[in-house]
Image (cartoon, rainbow, N blue to C red; front, side, top):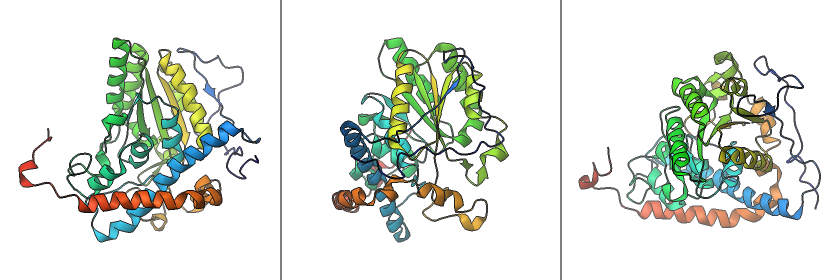
Length: 355
């Protein structure tokens, strides 16, 4: 079976002033002498097994993309009673990571949580009902897009407060260690969250206590409208290594198989009894919050996004996308219909489940 053109090729980006490679011959990875590992997606033909995995993961990524495109369509109607932070362009991260975990592993997400919610197996009906502010939503219509949760499938919650779920993941990991459980916890965050004090405290505590937690950074290079090089004097992986935590960076954030492999490797190390930092380069196509584009603000141009789109399997692999889309569209429309038919919460429920 021929490789899919443009999907599994290796692409190197030039090093920026904050992207200093570790020297050759650096110490091998250990809990105290970490070095960064490289990730090389296959350029050769896919095996039958990899092709089956690719198709399955592609479907989930396409589901996320089409769900969010449906949200874009619905948003002007004001039926959606919540701000939304779209993950269009970043789908491969959520899908590859969640598929590299075990079903009982727990994920703690950010306000840009649609992708992880769906990739972990959350109900589409409950998600759309939550966006609509209806009783059938994951939180009874009272939490909205930034606070999705599906504990029944291991998505333990998301929060509008930057970096706030990172210590929750560390706490969950500590409980696994004390109970002798084989589960791991995953703390999802963006590059901007690494500037919060609680992130550094969490790294330190996890390193000291050897907590089985995977720190997962979705590096889209932006914190709202601010570029990473203008905000950070450090490189994330190098900074984490100073705590004695092993790290890995995946440049090919469009390649779901590369991300899955990196997650499988990282998760195995975490299960063996040490924290790990996995940083994945990605691209946010839409504005920070909302359903439009933001190039008119002149803080970034469309060039970087356009370059990413030329490698995006959901755009490149038109044949597979066309084959899968009708079934996915029906699934999404059923969820929208469920949300619209679900009643709004009543006054008697105003304070129910509110802490």
